[in-house]
Image (cartoon, rainbow, N blue to C red; front, side, top):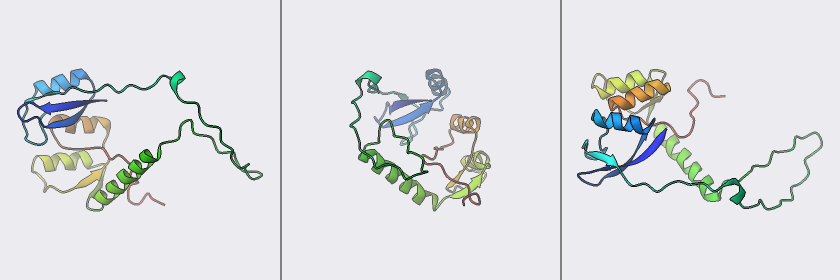
Length: 164
């Protein structure tokens, strides 16, 4: 998937769009499927984006040596992480997980009927309500191409009845 920064040409609203390729974006834009989520305008174009460049492997800082306590007899030695996450990233991930958990409290689990239910709500065949469930990549792509507003959950969710 490719993430493009998009901009509504009439108002300057900026937002992200996820596409399988540049060709997918061009195709969806030509079919009028790419619209501004704020004002609904189809006059949308790619915005200027800053490149996301990673350092080369030989430019990474050398890990600081650590003195860890010896493992107890019979205990497996923990595998060291190549690069620990910065504390800010850990805090951000915890905040995202907490926000998602809070949002799911008011959402109904629909399991593998997600695509069917989301589509029915989009077309007014069913009352709109917050739902979450499972969809295949193809189902999610079809919903997106139809203009059904969906978003992936950032933190995996255990279906009801399958938790320990």
